[in-house]
Image (cartoon, rainbow, N blue to C red; front, side, top):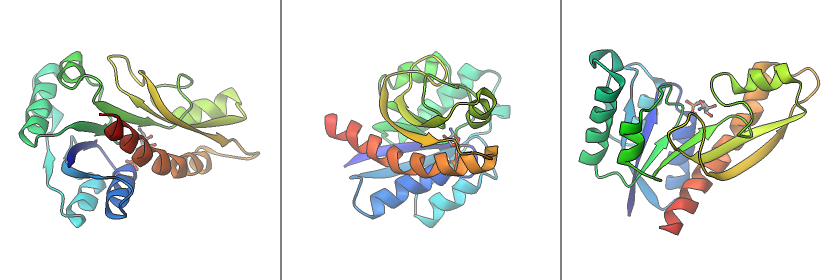
Length: 189
Ligand code: GRF
């Protein structure tokens, strides 16, 4: 069985969608470790509740982005992770990290990439006045929110939407396509 390493910084609802898909037999994998750069990330509790090992690596403890990323790579290798899933991990990853797992890092992003990369994708969509936005799962390359797209789901922007309402509607789709995209990648290998 293939082993996932999931990286989080916060709430961890996408992590939960992965754990639920595994529990329900929709995803044939195990989560070997959940790593967070934030000690109090609520997602860590979700991992513990599912019996998944957690580790916190605080970026403040490292002198540079590269040294931090090397430490992350070490931890993931120690857990014999086959695929790395970024799930609300709010750190830019250096080439050191991306090259350690070529083609084996996935990310979920709350827009139809290549539109609205970076922070506050839902706010960017509202500010641009688009009528349709969505969610994307892609393979991570060395550019931010960039790389081959695996799955996308369109989400309408409704009259009177604010950032919260739109984010919630997009998040529902993220929770569906992330486990599906992981299964796709695992099936291909
Ligand atoms: C999601 O909207 C994800 O697309 C973005 O960060 C958010 C993380 O949410 N990268 P959660 O921690 O998975 O609940």
